[in-house]
Image (tube, rainbow, N blue to C red; front, top):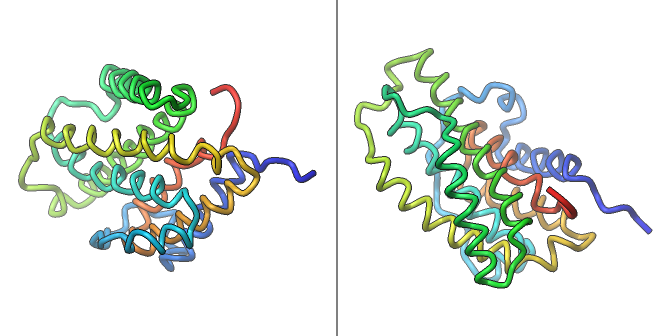
Length: 213
């Protein structure tokens, strides 16, 4: 019997497929490269079927990674830190409750969301480095962080549902294949730049992981 692929191997496979899809192979090591504008995701229905049942989950993770731009802009030049343990606990507690309400696994949901939180930090740190290096690229307007967090909460709720809906495929030997195909399709459909591609990869290693967190 073939062993279940490790989360690390899943992440490597996803990043490789995503980087090839964007043609960003030479730029992945430099996340401060200029970002390409995010485009719409591919159509629902048949596209989701082609890429397995993990594409909706991956697309929501991508939406969360893209919203991190607004989080960074809202915090830039303020005392609000990138690492916010209180907010992180609040998010993890909320998604665990939502998972229980759906009859889903709160432990797996929390594990996946820890990666979503770390992926957001990848974007924020990358943008901070870019803006420090070239102040002309820094945001000139500060989004309202409360409003941005409402949008994140909306995405979080949909992502909890996608995690619940994908339990069977996430626990199957085909998980890595579905994850890789879904990630490549989402990176291509949303035209993610290297920074957001790397961040999306950081958001996914626990998707195919089984067992204790």
